[in-house]
Length: 188
Image 1 (cartoon, rainbow, N blue to C red):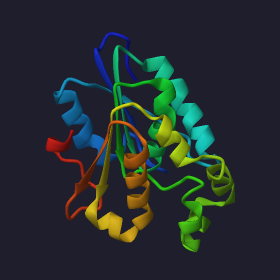
Image 2: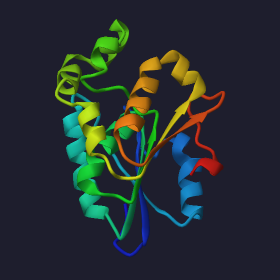
Image 3: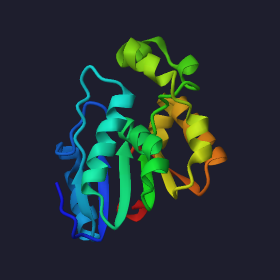
Image 4: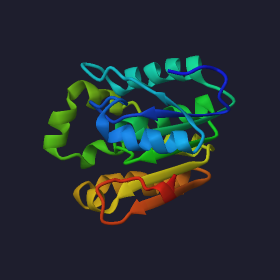
C-alpha cells in the first residue's frame, strides 16, 4: 500500500464491484504517480455489505496510510464513500467521479431495476444517509465529475451533483463532454 514518507498521497476508491487493480485504473494510477502522488489503492469488500460498512473500511485504511497531504479520488460508490467521510477525515481535496445518487433524497427517484440491483439492505442503509446534511457540513475543496452521456441515462446523478454544489462550500462541477465518465489529464 504505502509508507509514511511521501508528501502527497491520493486514495483511490473504485466503484461498486471494482478493485483498484482493475485494468481501467492503470492509466490513471500512472498519471497520478507522474504528477508526484503516492497512490494508495483502497480495496473494499463489496459483497453482502452496505455503504456504512464501506465507509468504515475506508476510514480504517485512510487512518493507517494517511500522510502529510492527503487527497481522495472516488468513483461512483467510491465517490459516495469519499463524500461521506471527507468532513471527518479532512483531506486537502476530494475528487468525486460520478457521485452515485445513493442517499435518502434519491430513493424516490430510483427506477425499480436500480432498486433491485442495489438490494433491500443497501436501500435501507441509504435511507439513513442525507446527502443534503453531508453537503452542508462539507468544507473540503471538492470537484465533482460526471459524463455528459451518463447524465442523460442517470439524471439523478446531476441532481446529486447540483445539490452538493448548492449546499457545500468550495465545490465545482466538471461535465466531461460526450463521455460516460472519463478523466482527462487536464482535469486532474
